Image (tube, rainbow, N blue to C red; front, side, top):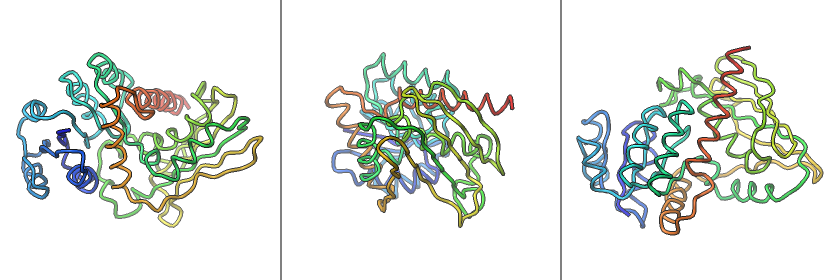
Amino acid sequence: MRIGLLGTGPWARMAHAPALSEHPGLDFAGVWGRRPDAAKELAELHGTRAYDDVDALLDDVDAVAIALPPGVQAQLAARAARAGRHLLLDKPLAMTVEEGRAVVDAVRDSGVASVVFFTTRFLSEPEAWITEQAGVQGWFTARAQWLGSVFTSDSPFAASPWRQEKGALWDVGPHALSVLLPVLGDVRRVAAAAPGPGDTVHLVLNHAAGASSTLTLSLTAPPAAAAAGVELRGEAGVTFLPESSEAVLPALTRAADALLDAARTGRPHPCDAAFALRITEILATAEAVLDDA
């Protein structure tokens, strides 16, 4: 499969470009970015071509990986899908429900495959745990904490305008939801939402299977307090999301494997654009509750 990369920022440089160039099942055909000089530099680093025109890249590939801000991603993803290109996307899918729905509609109408890179879902031990817990009945409650220090450390993502505007709810909220939804079912109600220090938010969710969950999300945690975890409690007892020693590149490689499989078989992956749209809808609801608080 010939694949192109849209984006030249820190995430494209440290994750997408290496994963695509090293994947044995992909032909890394080129890079397009909003900064042509950066696209040229990244393309040269990985022995591929820099494109000045995004449509020219779309004409030359079977699929695209997108490492761009969500609002830009959604527009280009819909455009690529309408051109018949498979999609390897990042979270969040979009900044609005309408933009996310446009991506899903384009994917459905064109019959292309889509995979959204929720990192935890492509780490071996955590994904196995999620699959196991999804088959267990009687979960009563869950607690998820996704505490990052993007804004309190020397992070290359701290200057990201969309992160500065939207904060942890939209950046790490998708990760927490990508773990909880397969286990507890869809969210029926955002029962409460309250701000904490910095961009920290606290959510209480009611799930379709009857369980409730609480989420604490932050990008402004002190570095010594930064961590991510999920605790489930129910009839089977207590269990915790296992930590993973795997790096991001193997996980992104598995996401690319999933895209190849979905394109070959026509079977949607559990982390497809439709799943990401549902997460976008939940985030938008939570944001509205926070705005009304």
